[in-house]
Structure formats: structure tokens, C-alpha cells
Length: 112
Length: 113
Image (cartoon, rainbow over all chains, first blue to last red; front, side, top):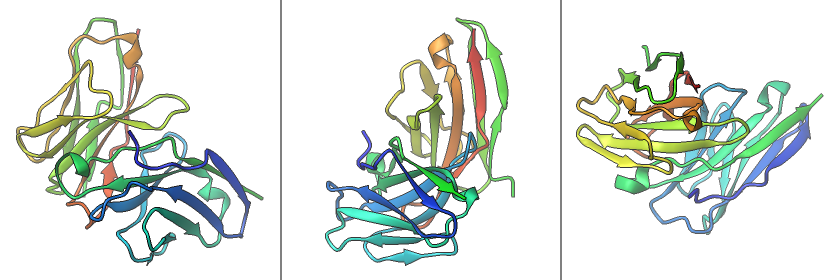
């Protein structure tokens, strides 16, 4: 079972920031939060991951709450090409906890 | 770099036939996994492996076998194909948790008649 919950869909205007929420209330201290996205039928694409500190890369920012029970993926300037299904995943370090289980994700629609 | 290579990309089987989906990675990743994706649904984990000689079941393992005799290869076997196994299959590999992302193959589209 996926350890995360995400709303099924959201939309935002092109050029605006897209803030995608994720709840992971049962996360353990050594589990990481990963975000992926899938465009059409392509293989999922890695976006970003973090443990407890906020992270930023060329694609997005990841904000993790202090209690680590939720996080937000921020796409600072959404474009039409960012329309995709976004998956928030919790992943542990070893053994069975290291498996990556995808939930249903959140469908982001970027409108012109 | 080739990354994660899946073969074949497309396959049509008849019910009861067997086949193997091949997956190879050239990044020396210890972790490898297989997913299936059905229309309108997310990816569901079939089997995964945390290293050579070690495999374990995911969410939907029934009807599938795997083995991991080398670090590079992680084949997925369908012993007796069923129409319910019609799906797109993705293989993925990764470096140790916390140090990097999961790399996906391009997918294998399987139709079972």
C-alpha cells in the first residue's frame, strides 16, 4: 500500500507556481520523500527527493514540514509541458522498506 | 550510457503462452524493480530486488516470476499468460536510497489475447 495520499487532480495557469501537496503521516525517521512525474505513457521521471530539509533543483522545490508528515512540491513557473501525473513516494533505506510503491498520483493540468 | 534497457517494446501473446521480458542496466545499480501500469491507473509494483540473488514480491506478484543472477539483469517471466496481464510494463533501477533517483526503461507493451 502506498504510504502517501494526494488529491486526485489540480490545475494552474501557465507561468504561475504550481503547489502540489502530499500527506505522509506515517513516515519513519529514515524514510525519504521522492517526487516523480509521468507524462503520457512514458516512464516516470525523477523530480526531486528529500529527507527533512527543503530541497531545490533546476526543476522544482520540495518543502517538507517540520514534523515530516506532509510535503509540497513547487513548480515555480508552470508550463504546458508540466501537465502530467505527479507521484509522491516515501522510501526507506533497506530491505522491504526500500521498495518504491506508487499511489495514484495527482494529475496536474496547466492551462494557457 | 544505455541506462535501463527493456526488450521487447511490444509483444502479443495468446492465453497460456509464456514469455520473458528482459531488463538490463549498465549503471551498477543494486536495486531493480518491475511495475505494471494499466489504463488510468498508477504504477503497481510486481517484484523488486535489492541485489544479486535477492528478490521479493511487490503489490501484484501473482502470475510473474523473477530472478536476479547478476547485478545487471532482472528478467520478468510470465509462465502462462492471461488476458488480465495485458498492460504496459516498466523496469527500473536505482542507486542506494537517498543518493539518487529511480531510472526507468521505456516500457514494454504486452497484449494477451
